[in-house]
Image 1: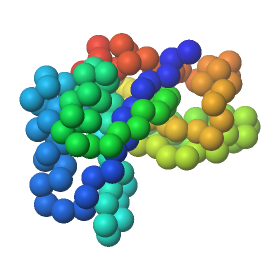
Image 2: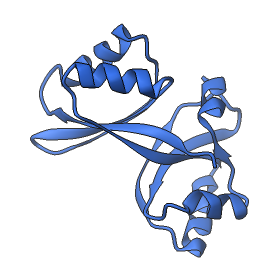
Image 3: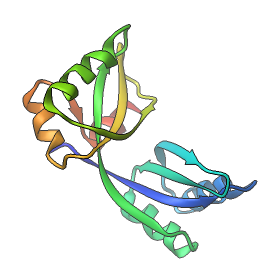
Image 4: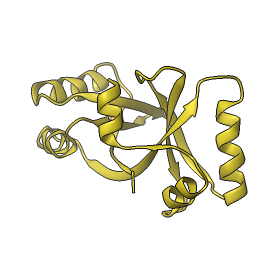
Length: 144
């Protein structure tokens, strides 16, 4: 199954906090493919797709960050009006609930990539069986 491993970590909502994460990964030689921040007044949840999750996770933990690894799906979406609506038609038909999602840049002509976290651990198999194009970490690496 084409699932991606994502790192999530709490980051204080203060100047320089995101910079520390990025510098830690830079010093470890780890590339960020995608990132998303959901914030509150006190802290943010930073979600990262990395080219080397093992190395990135170790570097962040050694720098004092508390991390959590989760699995997400990268879905190729036609880059046109209604492209994402077509994906939601399939997820709705399958009864899948989206926990969160974020878009990433990607070098594929006429395609966008959306990262999804669903409430159903079998969402990937269900979506693939319904004809939704799932991307692997290697697919995303080639696109960047």
